[in-house]
Image (cartoon, rainbow over all chains, first blue to last red):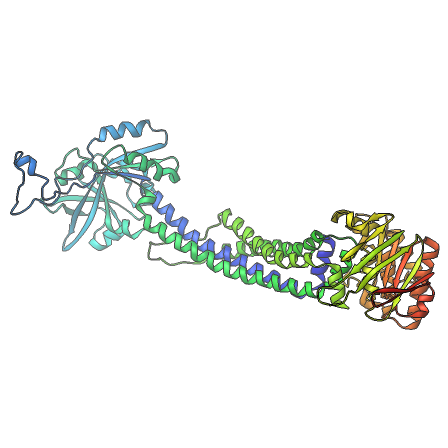
Length: 416
Length: 220
């Protein structure tokens, strides 16, 4: 029957080519749209993973409530009425038992490295320019093991801040805002203490505006000094072996203490919601294209079957069974699906390669790579191939089943 | 041997039965013509005898085996190996050459290679030895019908059923087709049941069964 199916396809060249074109275009559309969307996504995830820790263990903010201090001041009173109720942070947020965390992380085989941090909000001033920023106090050696920030240094080395000495690494964008250059001295204050002079010993650019414009790195001891909270740690950055198990580990650890433990994907949940919407749009768009291609197979096969009723009758009278007739038409759809899908995959691959060399300007999320970010993930090609085949099989199965149900005598009677 | 026992056929759409209590026996190697006016039930009887249709009641037996007792795969195999069909319209597959059309029944049992020689010989016998690779559209109506006869004989069937095989042909081509059927019946011993409304062609058959209003009115 395969022999006859092929002859049918060859005999109606124009219809075969048009159907192939439909399936091919659907597959190309899926590959290209997915390549672009996933390319951007992979770039974004790489940025998130490279520039940030996989898991953050952060001190939980302890906010005073109206009756938080009742028992401390009036242990025996049944009810205390405050004219001005207590409010604000109890004290500077800090990790209660950092040593306990260090022990846990050192012995966990899923952990590659960790880095204690002290992060605080600061105001940086240079001449007349004042910019608020986030100072991340780190131990440069430990931090280098957790993130790839050292690779994104544009001037100086990441380890230049090692050992303290009031030195800072500032994001390129922030430097521009301040009007400062590497080697300049800037004044840093946490808002409550007198400004302290710091030297800009390096700059970095990770490609994400939020980091390049709003973050400053310094030694952990310097950060603690600015905040007047020596030896306090308010965050531990952790790098793990399997990034896709980070959320599971974070949830597990969060049960061990009162600290806030969040994985990279939990922290960026909003990005992942956008990804889900992107996926829905991607599947809907390509689904529509493949549906049109599928309808073309369905229509053509229906037309062919109505034209081939006599042939079906003679084949059945020769002893060919219902399944043989189903196979005769179904296999035509499968051949079209496989051929159209394969052509679509190859053309889609070339189109993606072409797109990946196109110059691409900075987007809202960052500076980009300079060219279009296109993914060549094999899953895209597998999904595209499978989708085109499924669309073809469904579209040809329905008319093929109808053809199989035709009995020779009904066809002969109808013909006569 | 084909035995038809008390065959009764009625369609849901018609009030009166098409066939009523038909009894007939066709011996091995016979050439029988079914005659009758339009609507007499001759074609319906032939299709019931040939297993393509089923009677409302009654039985058809091939060598004492009732058709109703065969399951679908056996029935398909029986049709493929023991029965050949020639219809009024040739029903050739337009994408295939004469030779490929003739070999089509052999593909069901993957005998296309072993029977290729026979197919060529059959086409030569029906006078189409020079047109083995012509497509149906490149052949005349008579030639197409001759290809259909060769196709019906390729599995060397015991029984050949022909439904007005000359109905769509001119007299000259009709004569050629009838002579071919007669020759295969005599030389190969193929049992032939042919529906026709042409008394001249019917006379070439060994026996004629006349049907009138769904009943056998005369058998000679």
